[in-house]
Length: 254
Image (tube, rainbow, N blue to C red):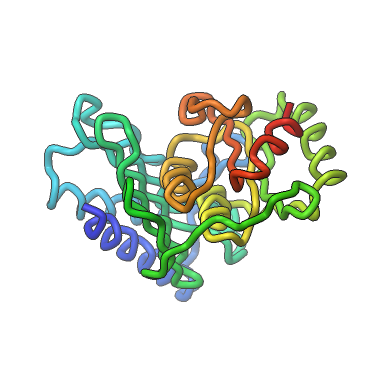
Protein backbone atom coordinates (compact mmCIF):
# COMPACT_ATOMS: atom_id res chain seq x y z
CA UNK A 1 0.00 0.00 0.00
CA UNK A 2 2.85 2.38 0.79
CA UNK A 3 4.42 1.55 -2.58
CA UNK A 4 1.19 2.50 -4.33
CA UNK A 5 1.14 5.78 -2.40
CA UNK A 6 4.75 6.48 -3.42
CA UNK A 7 3.97 5.72 -7.06
CA UNK A 8 0.96 8.03 -6.95
CA UNK A 9 2.93 10.83 -5.29
CA UNK A 10 5.72 10.57 -7.85
CA UNK A 11 3.21 10.63 -10.71
CA UNK A 12 1.65 13.78 -9.25
CA UNK A 13 5.13 15.24 -8.78
CA UNK A 14 5.98 14.69 -12.44
CA UNK A 15 2.80 16.52 -13.47
CA UNK A 16 3.71 19.41 -11.16
CA UNK A 17 7.32 19.59 -12.35
CA UNK A 18 6.32 19.46 -16.01
CA UNK A 19 3.91 22.36 -15.50
CA UNK A 20 6.59 24.35 -13.65
CA UNK A 21 9.28 23.70 -16.29
CA UNK A 22 7.03 24.28 -19.29
CA UNK A 23 6.02 27.66 -18.00
CA UNK A 24 2.45 26.55 -18.55
CA UNK A 25 -0.08 29.34 -18.25
CA UNK A 26 -1.77 28.62 -14.94
CA UNK A 27 -5.52 29.01 -14.68
CA UNK A 28 -5.86 30.23 -11.10
CA UNK A 29 -9.19 30.23 -9.32
CA UNK A 30 -9.87 31.54 -5.82
CA UNK A 31 -11.73 29.05 -3.62
CA UNK A 32 -11.95 31.71 -0.92
CA UNK A 33 -9.79 34.58 0.30
CA UNK A 34 -6.09 33.70 -0.06
CA UNK A 35 -6.90 30.08 -1.04
CA UNK A 36 -6.30 29.11 -4.66
CA UNK A 37 -6.52 26.15 -7.02
CA UNK A 38 -5.03 25.59 -10.49
CA UNK A 39 -5.58 23.05 -13.25
CA UNK A 40 -2.32 21.44 -12.09
CA UNK A 41 -3.79 20.75 -8.62
CA UNK A 42 -6.74 19.02 -10.26
CA UNK A 43 -4.63 17.02 -12.72
CA UNK A 44 -2.28 15.86 -9.95
CA UNK A 45 -5.18 14.81 -7.73
CA UNK A 46 -6.87 12.92 -10.58
CA UNK A 47 -3.61 11.06 -11.28
CA UNK A 48 -3.27 10.03 -7.62
CA UNK A 49 -6.85 8.80 -7.38
CA UNK A 50 -6.60 6.93 -10.69
CA UNK A 51 -3.56 4.96 -9.48
CA UNK A 52 -5.13 4.19 -6.10
CA UNK A 53 -8.51 3.18 -7.52
CA UNK A 54 -6.84 0.79 -9.95
CA UNK A 55 -5.07 -0.95 -7.05
CA UNK A 56 -7.78 -0.60 -4.38
CA UNK A 57 -11.23 0.05 -5.94
CA UNK A 58 -12.96 -0.41 -2.58
CA UNK A 59 -10.99 2.31 -0.74
CA UNK A 60 -12.39 5.73 0.18
CA UNK A 61 -10.94 9.20 -0.33
CA UNK A 62 -10.80 12.58 1.34
CA UNK A 63 -9.14 14.85 -1.21
CA UNK A 64 -8.74 18.62 -1.17
CA UNK A 65 -10.20 19.28 -4.61
CA UNK A 66 -12.72 16.46 -5.12
CA UNK A 67 -13.90 16.00 -1.52
CA UNK A 68 -14.96 12.79 0.23
CA UNK A 69 -16.08 9.48 -1.25
CA UNK A 70 -16.99 6.06 0.23
CA UNK A 71 -16.98 7.32 3.83
CA UNK A 72 -17.81 3.83 5.10
CA UNK A 73 -14.66 2.28 3.58
CA UNK A 74 -12.18 0.53 5.89
CA UNK A 75 -9.27 2.42 4.27
CA UNK A 76 -9.32 6.14 3.48
CA UNK A 77 -6.74 8.08 1.45
CA UNK A 78 -6.32 11.70 2.57
CA UNK A 79 -4.83 13.65 -0.32
CA UNK A 80 -3.43 17.13 -0.93
CA UNK A 81 -2.13 17.16 -4.53
CA UNK A 82 -0.19 20.41 -4.04
CA UNK A 83 0.24 21.60 -0.48
CA UNK A 84 1.51 25.14 -0.98
CA UNK A 85 -0.43 26.09 -4.12
CA UNK A 86 0.21 29.81 -3.58
CA UNK A 87 3.95 29.09 -3.50
CA UNK A 88 3.62 27.00 -6.67
CA UNK A 89 1.73 29.76 -8.48
CA UNK A 90 4.53 32.21 -7.71
CA UNK A 91 7.38 29.83 -8.46
CA UNK A 92 8.42 29.81 -4.80
CA UNK A 93 10.00 26.34 -4.49
CA UNK A 94 8.31 25.11 -1.31
CA UNK A 95 5.35 22.81 -2.02
CA UNK A 96 4.65 19.10 -1.80
CA UNK A 97 2.33 16.21 -2.54
CA UNK A 98 0.82 14.84 0.68
CA UNK A 99 -0.87 11.44 0.99
CA UNK A 100 -2.01 9.95 4.29
CA UNK A 101 -3.73 6.57 4.55
CA UNK A 102 -6.11 5.75 7.40
CA UNK A 103 -7.16 2.24 8.41
CA UNK A 104 -10.37 2.37 10.44
CA UNK A 105 -9.70 6.08 11.05
CA UNK A 106 -6.20 5.51 12.45
CA UNK A 107 -3.22 6.76 10.43
CA UNK A 108 -1.38 3.80 8.88
CA UNK A 109 0.85 5.13 6.08
CA UNK A 110 2.23 8.49 5.01
CA UNK A 111 3.97 10.02 2.00
CA UNK A 112 5.13 13.61 1.61
CA UNK A 113 6.93 14.22 -1.69
CA UNK A 114 8.81 17.41 -2.55
CA UNK A 115 9.05 17.39 -6.35
CA UNK A 116 11.44 20.37 -6.43
CA UNK A 117 14.14 18.72 -4.30
CA UNK A 118 13.09 15.13 -5.15
CA UNK A 119 12.81 14.38 -1.43
CA UNK A 120 10.48 11.54 -0.51
CA UNK A 121 9.35 11.24 3.12
CA UNK A 122 7.57 7.99 4.02
CA UNK A 123 6.28 6.26 7.13
CA UNK A 124 4.19 3.27 8.13
CA UNK A 125 2.71 2.75 11.57
CA UNK A 126 5.22 1.01 13.82
CA UNK A 127 7.96 0.92 11.16
CA UNK A 128 9.68 4.28 11.47
CA UNK A 129 10.03 7.33 9.22
CA UNK A 130 12.31 7.67 6.22
CA UNK A 131 13.70 10.31 3.88
CA UNK A 132 14.71 8.81 0.53
CA UNK A 133 14.97 5.38 2.24
CA UNK A 134 17.20 6.70 5.05
CA UNK A 135 15.79 6.42 8.58
CA UNK A 136 15.14 9.80 10.18
CA UNK A 137 14.50 10.94 13.75
CA UNK A 138 13.36 14.18 15.32
CA UNK A 139 16.11 16.42 16.65
CA UNK A 140 17.57 16.10 20.14
CA UNK A 141 16.61 19.69 20.98
CA UNK A 142 15.93 19.89 24.73
CA UNK A 143 15.30 23.62 25.31
CA UNK A 144 12.81 25.94 23.61
CA UNK A 145 15.45 28.69 23.67
CA UNK A 146 17.51 26.59 21.24
CA UNK A 147 14.61 25.55 18.99
CA UNK A 148 13.92 26.50 15.39
CA UNK A 149 10.12 26.64 15.18
CA UNK A 150 8.01 26.43 12.05
CA UNK A 151 4.56 27.94 11.67
CA UNK A 152 1.88 28.96 9.21
CA UNK A 153 -0.32 32.04 9.20
CA UNK A 154 -4.03 31.35 9.86
CA UNK A 155 -5.05 32.87 6.51
CA UNK A 156 -8.31 30.89 6.43
CA UNK A 157 -9.26 32.05 9.94
CA UNK A 158 -8.37 35.72 10.11
CA UNK A 159 -10.74 36.06 13.06
CA UNK A 160 -8.13 34.24 15.16
CA UNK A 161 -5.27 36.46 14.04
CA UNK A 162 -5.02 38.18 17.41
CA UNK A 163 -4.56 34.83 19.18
CA UNK A 164 -1.99 33.81 16.59
CA UNK A 165 0.03 37.02 16.87
CA UNK A 166 0.22 36.57 20.65
CA UNK A 167 1.50 33.03 20.12
CA UNK A 168 3.98 34.24 17.51
CA UNK A 169 5.26 36.89 19.90
CA UNK A 170 5.91 34.24 22.55
CA UNK A 171 7.98 32.14 20.16
CA UNK A 172 9.86 35.11 18.71
CA UNK A 173 10.89 36.01 22.26
CA UNK A 174 11.44 32.48 23.57
CA UNK A 175 12.84 30.41 20.68
CA UNK A 176 16.01 30.56 18.59
CA UNK A 177 14.03 31.40 15.45
CA UNK A 178 10.68 31.17 13.70
CA UNK A 179 10.16 30.18 10.05
CA UNK A 180 7.06 30.39 7.85
CA UNK A 181 7.56 28.67 4.48
CA UNK A 182 3.96 28.07 3.37
CA UNK A 183 3.49 24.29 3.09
CA UNK A 184 2.41 22.61 6.33
CA UNK A 185 3.06 19.04 5.15
CA UNK A 186 6.69 19.90 4.43
CA UNK A 187 7.04 21.77 7.73
CA UNK A 188 5.82 18.66 9.55
CA UNK A 189 8.18 16.47 7.51
CA UNK A 190 11.01 18.83 8.49
CA UNK A 191 10.17 18.30 12.17
CA UNK A 192 10.32 14.54 11.53
CA UNK A 193 13.83 14.74 10.05
CA UNK A 194 15.18 17.31 12.52
CA UNK A 195 15.34 20.39 10.29
CA UNK A 196 12.75 22.04 12.53
CA UNK A 197 12.40 21.35 16.25
CA UNK A 198 8.70 22.28 16.51
CA UNK A 199 5.74 23.45 14.45
CA UNK A 200 2.29 24.89 15.09
CA UNK A 201 -0.56 26.20 12.96
CA UNK A 202 -4.24 27.05 13.36
CA UNK A 203 -7.11 26.14 11.04
CA UNK A 204 -5.57 23.41 8.90
CA UNK A 205 -7.50 20.76 6.96
CA UNK A 206 -6.98 17.00 7.46
CA UNK A 207 -5.07 16.71 4.16
CA UNK A 208 -2.57 19.30 5.41
CA UNK A 209 -1.74 17.27 8.52
CA UNK A 210 -2.42 13.54 8.07
CA UNK A 211 0.83 12.42 6.43
CA UNK A 212 3.08 14.82 8.34
CA UNK A 213 1.63 13.86 11.71
CA UNK A 214 2.41 10.17 11.20
CA UNK A 215 5.91 11.02 9.95
CA UNK A 216 6.62 12.88 13.21
CA UNK A 217 5.18 10.15 15.44
CA UNK A 218 7.22 7.48 13.65
CA UNK A 219 10.33 9.67 13.94
CA UNK A 220 9.95 9.83 17.74
CA UNK A 221 8.18 13.19 18.03
CA UNK A 222 4.90 14.24 19.63
CA UNK A 223 1.82 15.66 17.90
CA UNK A 224 -1.33 17.12 19.43
CA UNK A 225 -3.84 19.92 19.35
CA UNK A 226 -3.20 23.12 21.28
CA UNK A 227 -3.98 21.26 24.51
CA UNK A 228 -1.66 18.39 23.66
CA UNK A 229 -4.58 16.04 22.98
CA UNK A 230 -5.24 13.89 19.91
CA UNK A 231 -8.04 15.96 18.36
CA UNK A 232 -5.94 17.95 15.89
CA UNK A 233 -7.45 16.28 12.81
CA UNK A 234 -10.89 17.48 13.92
CA UNK A 235 -9.98 20.93 15.27
CA UNK A 236 -7.44 21.81 12.58
CA UNK A 237 -5.09 23.21 15.25
CA UNK A 238 -1.82 21.30 15.44
CA UNK A 239 1.31 21.42 17.55
CA UNK A 240 4.30 19.13 17.01
CA UNK A 241 7.74 19.00 18.61
CA UNK A 242 10.55 16.89 19.95
CA UNK A 243 9.52 15.16 23.19
CA UNK A 244 11.67 17.30 25.48
CA UNK A 245 10.32 20.67 24.31
CA UNK A 246 6.71 19.64 23.61
CA UNK A 247 5.50 20.80 27.08
CA UNK A 248 7.22 24.17 26.66
CA UNK A 249 5.69 24.60 23.19
CA UNK A 250 2.22 23.87 24.59
CA UNK A 251 2.79 26.35 27.40
CA UNK A 252 3.78 29.06 24.91
CA UNK A 253 0.65 28.36 22.87
CA UNK A 254 -1.54 28.74 25.95
